[in-house]
Amino acid sequence: MQSRLSKFRRQTSLFKTNLQILSGTNLALTPLVDVIFLLLIFFMISSSLVFQPGITVNLPETRQEFKSVADKLIISLTKQNLLFFNDQRLENWHHLEQRLANVAYNLNSNQRRGTEFDISRSPIIILKADKDVPYNDIVKILSITRRYGLNVFLVTKTEKI
Image 1 (cartoon, rainbow, N blue to C red):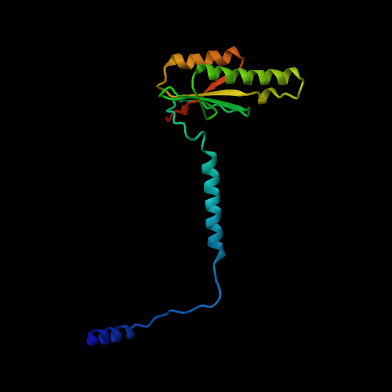
Image 2 (image 1 turned 90 degrees about the vertical axis):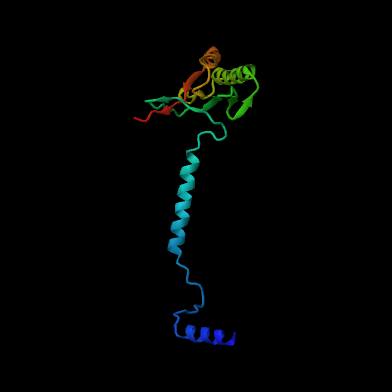
């Protein structure tokens, strides 16, 4: 055992090392700042791309995009016939009708009071329905919103050409 240890020491003493012990801190701040900015940019971009987390809907495709600056109220209808209004699950169609009636009432009361009202900021109902949802359900939502005089936009995916 002693011979192996002495042989190891002789072999390791043949190699010179360039190891130096530095005193103080010589951190390169430029790479650290670069990494922090890259992480910041990544999280800013990825957080703005999340349209509505938690509700999975397989959207149909279209060639045009619709953009608006108005207040958005989102109605989601999943393949399993689950109905959502702004991320809150609704038990039935009657609850959806109540919510839309409240939106229409608030809109009309603001107009009657003579408060500052910007027509471009009037609420827009966005219908986000799975492509496999029966057409009858989509028409039912459209008829409820039309009854209260609300504008409805359908959400689709942009078709890849």
